[in-house]
Image (cartoon, rainbow, N blue to C red; front, side, top):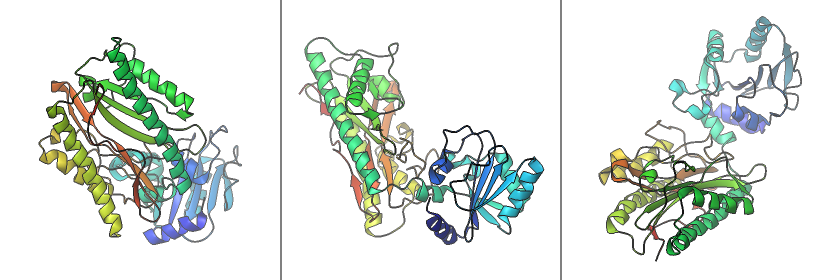
Length: 394
């Protein structure tokens, strides 16, 4: 934890402090920013208050007085709930505007963690609770160049797995032993294991109407057998199997045939242009040193799809933050599911993944890349970027 940097950010934001609170290790954001030991049994509430100026304050239960011992600041110990409330009030002092992991209207659920009752308690002290969303982006979702290197390592394995999967589909189709979706899913997971890559789930391997389901999960029971003429979508993500590694996440499209039908390619080109429009606004704004919000990138991407007549088929946000979790807690590229008004800051990694999903036509399209903005404002993309649907039997 960089106390000086946090206090500088609080002062710049006009906040009196940042109050961290947790119960039963529910707040992974607090755990990462404060380097909390979440492996130890945690059964009591604790608070850690960083004022914009002055010494931090800890409030811990008598049964677990060690909970925040690794952090700087004065320690206060409570037992009855009345004592907890009174000590918390004293810790906060004259503060009027305090940040917590809270989002008004649950607009950004990734940071909407503190329970309503605790918010009520702070308000009863006369304190206005402010969302910590922008602070979280700065101190929990910021990536270093070392983080970026781990992302690139993961990306290299994803492309190895994707290329091998496309080749394997083509090989099996040619030999007259067409694969099922789950078989290619398992084939890719074997490659992940060989390259020390981990993911909690996935990858998505989907043909035709399954590709029209953005979160299709192949199983033994639901998998289709692939055949010539099928449109194939592969969405894969993972990170290296070591602490602190950063995810990579991509989606590519293939066609099981020697030549991609023009109608399919034309639809893919809509999302390709939309993806490129999103990247262009990020590059333009950072080159001009101008602010950029997550919702603005979504708008730039979505406009291309809407103008092409496919707006109702683009049924999810344009992208998500990427960190130690594939869906991280930083700014998302979203003005559909939420209006993400957080700023895209240097050190941010996020996906750009426009899609068109047409279940009635048994077709789904998506292209996905990961964008990283360095601390110097350079906008970079790791790995190859798909420009056309890949003909797998060419």
